[in-house]
Amino acid sequence: MALKQRQIPSRKKKWRAWLEPSAAFKYLAIYQAIVADIANGRLLPGDPLPSQRALATQLDVDLTTVTKAYGMARAEGIIETRSGSGTCIAGTLARNNPSRFEPDVLDLSKNSPARPEGQKINELIAREISRAFVNTGDVSTFNYQETGGNLRNRLAGASWLEKRLEDVPVDRVILTSGAQSALFAICHLLSRRSGHLAVGQFCYPGIHTIAKQLDLHLVPITMDKDGLIPEDFERACQQYNLAGLYVVPNLDNPTTATLSETRREKLATIARKHGIAVIEDDPYYEIAGNGIAPVANFAPELTWHIATLSKCATPTFRLAYLVAPDAVSAQQVAATMQAMTMMVSPLFAELASQWIHNGLLEELTNAIREENLGRLRLAQLAFDGLNFTIPAQGSHIWISLPKPWQALEFAHQAERQNIKLLPASSFSPIPSTVSSESVRISLGAAANRSVLTEGLGKLRMILDLSQSLYLAII
Image 1 (tube, rainbow, N blue to C red):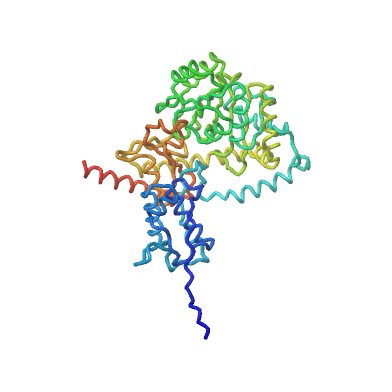
Image 2 (image 1 turned 45 degrees about the horizontal axis):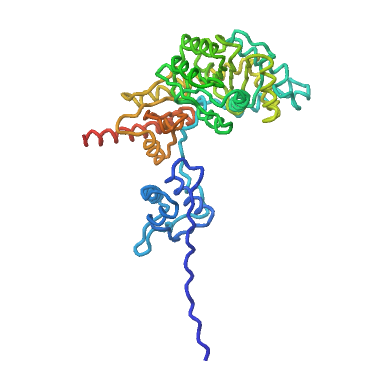
């Protein structure tokens, strides 16, 4: 008599844990990995997860990191704890609805220009593209162009820049695919001279990315509420063989500081004394509307002036105008641009020229400036009584957090409320030396003022709760 084979129930496959590399923090990397594997079917309702201690060992992270990740997943209803089974994927998940695991996130970490209420930018661009094709007529306009832009588009850029710069010869004007590509090309050229670049002690993260690619050492210059301190720049010039100085003169990113004309002239004088190039990244000149002369007016023979349309019109264009110190330098950087991007988009270049000539660029700038003012008033109300700077027209604020908050921990707590922002360490050339417990909050990325008001209210609630607990303890 043959024995009946006993059926052994199959065990559920063990989850192969991993960390989502794009996550800002490790606990979010664990949480997002769980969410992703649920969405793609690797994790099903009832599937077991490792114990917290086992997962911490497996991923080589702190136990508190796993606790925070599991806590977040549990609060979202994604995982649950069953008697005798431990932690597992919740049994009521809708596997075919991955968006269930993607909560709405208010991203205040990107310094996007505010979109004015009621403005239909998509329709506007579509209309203007049609007009460009009809009015231009010449098919060569939308064909391959010379790297720095054709003469007509460079002339348009020069005319736009004339209200800020004293002298804008067209042979020094180059069209680039956004400010970031212009910065890379300039730094690539200057790095042949030296591997050191002076920057503010807090500065635009994009320059950090470029420095890593080109193996440039960023030399931090001390700042105060009014921006770069010229005397410390002098000190850096004496201590290092600098390739150049990177400066955002208006509405500095992230500190919001605007350099006075006196400081700009002092920086230019020091740069000329030591023969150091100045990279003047001025995306907010039109938004600031203060009429202060750029550094380029004090040292035109040393200064690379960058003016992008991203902050005063739309990031859609990915277009910037670069004014080089001289025609030879313009040709040199154009050669680098050719290797990088070949040319700017002929369509965007033509649209920009069209908007400069018909006044639409100025209209868009005025509308964004007005929207910034309205959003800044909301921020002023939300953070009343706290230590922060409100720029005259800008789209971001820089808050010094009250004790006992640390910037990184506040960013963690904000992320738990599905709000992204950037701590001071994200802007420091040498993060380990950061002593400022500050954060940058960008106001423009919110879809509208109502969404922004709700987000700022949540951030203030986090701050107030901490303060009350802190005061109770001490």
